[in-house]
Image (cartoon, rainbow, N blue to C red; front, side):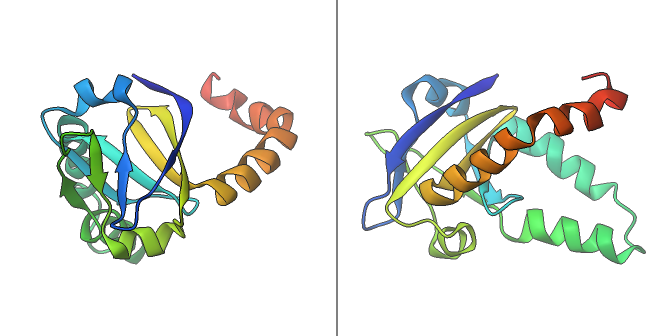
Length: 143
Protein backbone atom coordinates (compact mmCIF):
# COMPACT_ATOMS: atom_id res chain seq x y z
CA UNK A 1 0.00 0.00 0.00
CA UNK A 2 1.32 3.42 -0.97
CA UNK A 3 0.78 6.27 1.50
CA UNK A 4 2.45 9.58 2.27
CA UNK A 5 3.66 12.75 0.58
CA UNK A 6 7.24 13.28 -0.62
CA UNK A 7 8.89 16.28 -2.28
CA UNK A 8 11.44 15.71 -5.02
CA UNK A 9 13.05 17.62 -7.86
CA UNK A 10 12.99 16.78 -11.54
CA UNK A 11 16.34 17.10 -13.27
CA UNK A 12 16.86 18.65 -16.70
CA UNK A 13 16.33 15.25 -18.37
CA UNK A 14 12.93 14.74 -16.74
CA UNK A 15 14.17 12.19 -14.21
CA UNK A 16 12.39 11.92 -10.89
CA UNK A 17 13.57 9.99 -7.84
CA UNK A 18 10.85 7.69 -6.55
CA UNK A 19 10.83 7.53 -2.74
CA UNK A 20 13.02 4.61 -1.61
CA UNK A 21 10.23 3.06 0.49
CA UNK A 22 8.17 2.47 -2.71
CA UNK A 23 10.86 1.08 -5.00
CA UNK A 24 10.60 -2.49 -3.77
CA UNK A 25 6.89 -2.64 -4.66
CA UNK A 26 7.76 -1.35 -8.14
CA UNK A 27 10.80 -3.55 -8.80
CA UNK A 28 8.89 -5.87 -11.16
CA UNK A 29 8.10 -2.92 -13.40
CA UNK A 30 5.99 0.21 -13.39
CA UNK A 31 3.73 2.17 -15.71
CA UNK A 32 3.17 5.92 -15.66
CA UNK A 33 0.15 7.50 -17.32
CA UNK A 34 -2.01 10.58 -17.41
CA UNK A 35 -3.99 10.77 -14.21
CA UNK A 36 -6.86 12.94 -13.11
CA UNK A 37 -6.78 16.43 -11.60
CA UNK A 38 -3.63 17.30 -13.60
CA UNK A 39 -1.32 14.74 -12.09
CA UNK A 40 0.32 11.53 -13.29
CA UNK A 41 -0.47 8.06 -11.98
CA UNK A 42 2.35 5.58 -11.39
CA UNK A 43 1.29 1.94 -10.99
CA UNK A 44 3.24 -1.21 -10.31
CA UNK A 45 3.06 -3.43 -13.38
CA UNK A 46 0.74 -5.86 -11.56
CA UNK A 47 -1.68 -3.08 -10.54
CA UNK A 48 -1.53 -1.63 -14.05
CA UNK A 49 -2.63 -4.97 -15.51
CA UNK A 50 -5.68 -4.89 -13.20
CA UNK A 51 -6.54 -1.34 -14.26
CA UNK A 52 -6.05 -2.10 -17.97
CA UNK A 53 -8.37 -5.08 -17.62
CA UNK A 54 -11.08 -2.75 -16.28
CA UNK A 55 -10.61 -0.43 -19.25
CA UNK A 56 -10.93 -3.35 -21.67
CA UNK A 57 -14.39 -4.08 -20.24
CA UNK A 58 -15.73 -0.56 -20.83
CA UNK A 59 -18.48 -0.40 -23.47
CA UNK A 60 -16.88 0.60 -26.76
CA UNK A 61 -20.17 2.03 -28.00
CA UNK A 62 -20.14 4.81 -25.37
CA UNK A 63 -18.04 7.85 -26.24
CA UNK A 64 -17.13 8.70 -22.63
CA UNK A 65 -15.91 5.14 -22.04
CA UNK A 66 -13.76 5.32 -25.18
CA UNK A 67 -12.44 8.73 -24.18
CA UNK A 68 -11.49 7.59 -20.69
CA UNK A 69 -9.80 4.43 -21.96
CA UNK A 70 -7.83 6.52 -24.45
CA UNK A 71 -6.89 9.01 -21.75
CA UNK A 72 -5.48 6.30 -19.52
CA UNK A 73 -4.06 3.84 -22.07
CA UNK A 74 -2.77 5.95 -24.95
CA UNK A 75 -0.70 8.11 -22.61
CA UNK A 76 0.75 5.19 -20.65
CA UNK A 77 4.41 4.23 -20.73
CA UNK A 78 6.46 1.58 -18.98
CA UNK A 79 9.29 3.08 -16.93
CA UNK A 80 12.48 1.62 -15.55
CA UNK A 81 14.52 2.65 -12.56
CA UNK A 82 18.11 3.74 -12.91
CA UNK A 83 20.75 2.98 -10.28
CA UNK A 84 19.72 6.06 -8.26
CA UNK A 85 16.05 4.97 -8.13
CA UNK A 86 14.93 7.52 -10.70
CA UNK A 87 12.44 7.16 -13.53
CA UNK A 88 12.39 9.28 -16.66
CA UNK A 89 9.06 10.95 -17.28
CA UNK A 90 8.49 11.55 -20.98
CA UNK A 91 8.03 15.14 -22.09
CA UNK A 92 4.39 14.67 -23.13
CA UNK A 93 3.49 13.49 -19.60
CA UNK A 94 5.48 16.26 -17.93
CA UNK A 95 3.65 18.76 -20.12
CA UNK A 96 0.25 17.20 -19.34
CA UNK A 97 0.86 17.48 -15.58
CA UNK A 98 2.54 20.89 -15.80
CA UNK A 99 5.63 19.45 -14.11
CA UNK A 100 8.46 21.90 -13.71
CA UNK A 101 11.37 21.57 -11.30
CA UNK A 102 9.63 20.75 -8.01
CA UNK A 103 7.37 17.72 -7.78
CA UNK A 104 5.38 15.95 -5.09
CA UNK A 105 4.94 12.18 -5.07
CA UNK A 106 1.89 11.06 -3.10
CA UNK A 107 0.91 7.55 -2.11
CA UNK A 108 -2.75 6.82 -2.82
CA UNK A 109 -3.29 3.17 -1.81
CA UNK A 110 -2.71 1.24 -5.08
CA UNK A 111 -0.83 3.93 -7.00
CA UNK A 112 1.51 6.87 -6.68
CA UNK A 113 0.53 10.27 -7.97
CA UNK A 114 3.09 12.72 -9.33
CA UNK A 115 2.15 16.38 -9.04
CA UNK A 116 3.79 19.67 -9.84
CA UNK A 117 4.47 21.06 -6.34
CA UNK A 118 2.58 24.30 -6.95
CA UNK A 119 -0.45 22.52 -8.40
CA UNK A 120 -0.43 20.06 -5.47
CA UNK A 121 -0.32 22.85 -2.90
CA UNK A 122 -3.36 24.55 -4.49
CA UNK A 123 -5.25 21.26 -4.81
CA UNK A 124 -4.49 20.29 -1.21
CA UNK A 125 -5.50 23.69 0.14
CA UNK A 126 -8.86 23.47 -1.66
CA UNK A 127 -9.59 19.87 -0.71
CA UNK A 128 -8.54 20.45 2.92
CA UNK A 129 -10.97 23.37 3.10
CA UNK A 130 -13.75 21.13 1.73
CA UNK A 131 -12.86 17.99 3.72
CA UNK A 132 -16.05 17.92 5.83
CA UNK A 133 -18.26 18.35 2.76
CA UNK A 134 -16.26 15.68 0.89
CA UNK A 135 -16.55 13.25 3.82
CA UNK A 136 -20.30 13.76 4.01
CA UNK A 137 -20.69 13.12 0.28
CA UNK A 138 -18.71 9.89 0.59
CA UNK A 139 -20.84 8.63 3.47
CA UNK A 140 -22.99 6.66 1.03
CA UNK A 141 -19.88 4.62 0.11
CA UNK A 142 -19.28 3.63 3.72
CA UNK A 143 -16.37 6.01 4.24
